[in-house]
Length: 272
View 1 (cartoon, rainbow, N blue to C red):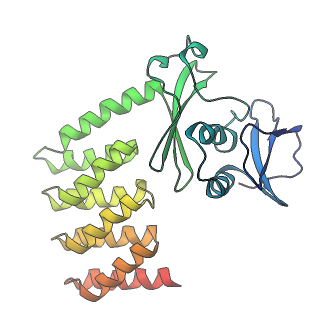
View 2 (cartoon, rainbow, N blue to C red):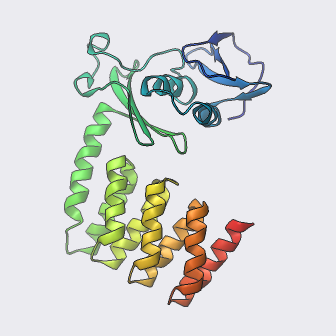
View 3 (cartoon, rainbow, N blue to C red):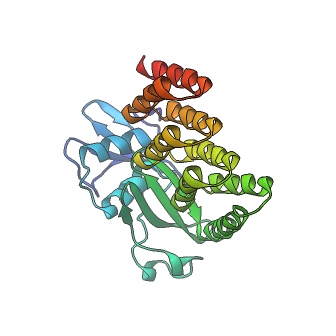
């Protein structure tokens, strides 16, 4: 995020979360207040700031991370609090399913109010990438129905239905959808469905250890060259030591020449 400093709007210190080496400033932009983090002379916003703070203080609690996400990542809510109790949220649509901030593995989940729409919103942050995704309670209900429909389509004899199911899972992008894409990529009986799942997983799974592990396993052991090729391309996009090592191994040992050539090229590109 490009930060104009000093900003055009009033500023004030923000100290609801304390991290050694950092100071925080709330910019009171009308209807769109936002937060910035300062480390020495460096001024950061959005994902850059959140990542730097989390790296410096990995011991922060789910409540503190949720507050930092709203302050740095979320849009227009830097001066507000995440959901903590139903008493503070009566009248908001979806309050019955809202939960307090939770941290599971590399995924932070918190709920907050959407004042204009009068609904509860669930936000998730991938701590490995600082990617934020927020959905209203109504959207979550719709996504839930689509996810169930996708699961049913995966068992269809029609390949178009199965491909559509994979597309629905990619569009969903939730942790449950990514887990299901991983399962399809690794074990579905139809190679073209596995290929599609690998491609979708590469786009929405992020560079998490779980996603990389699935793609490495597929590259090493899938019986079909097209699926292995898709895995190699996905690893080339994600990068990282494990991905590069797997690409180099495929370049040496894969039985398909195209997979060998593409893997070698992607590994060489990553090493530059």
